[in-house]
Length: 492
Image (tube, rainbow, N blue to C red; front, side, top):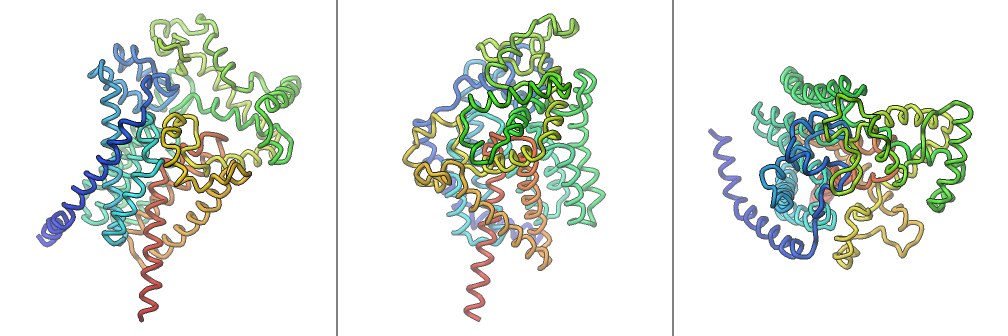
């Protein structure tokens, strides 16, 4: 009864703040909505199947999807099927709704971490009007969905910590399920670590933690098993091998780091080709090639008779191009290409261990680059050029530090160390509820960081977008605790 009364008082106390947040959010988007553009031809994205296939054969296409986990295609397919003329507008409003939810959940989570009301409102507002939120909210891709889902997972864990109702713990694993069928980054290894972490922190509830974790486990294993039976690989994405090719290419460049970073694309291709021809001549690799746009087109143009007869009528597998002229990255030939590539990539990494370590450093630099420094949001970034410069602490006049984001590396490295210290402090003071949420956030941040720099070399700053709100919350909460400690010590 007391808990219900406290909840009513909390809603009453903050309802005008929530109404104000809705007004702030809508006002900030009025300008953006008319100034920025979303990707009108969203199906130009390599992550999406063709619009016609999703509209006419949605579930068949999703079943034979091997290039990516299915949720993003399911979401886009449902919009196309139900709103064939207005699907872009529907997706835009859906992404805006997710943005508003991220804003409100961030405010609520900051309150949970004992940030004062004014501080929580100010800092959550600062994030939601930042170029990061504005630009990625207008880019229809899985990135903003992942951001929303990670914030939702954090929010449900907060609610479970406060209310101790099992429904919130179940919802937490339900959100994790959606996350795992949206992004291949979140694998079974991520789930295993998560179950161990939550099980340790809530030892009395470990049976329910294990029980509820079967929801994401069964969903992901079902996808993995389907891909194993149909295409011969155990995983959620057949393109994982293709994505590692560029990292293998950089590993063969036996030059100091600064020389590798300054080489032109043409110079890199020339040296990589020579190295890989030597490996092929030695019989070390079979079919590894430097995957450029031209090479992608060659895969698209491979003979259609290579597609097994049983897939001949499945457009998602048998058609090399989508109706808009873009390559169909779900084309059957990519499965065969990717299998051999994965084997060859690890051969190259073993042959050039120092080169591989150099690619890890390059990947880390890419991870910490400003998130708006990516071709995917170029058009909108130019439209907000002056505003972006206010936030672009890494732009130091085109210097080495500015070009490769070393300022951001230092800034975020210190933040990562700081939030580790803050989490340890919560554990030491036996703040179980807050420590659990902080550990979940920290675990997710580092899982994305480490898996990204080990397996990829570019596009990692886009991956960072989904965990930036988590790091931001922990940093604000930690600074608040530090300031409170210093203030109390001075007044004591």
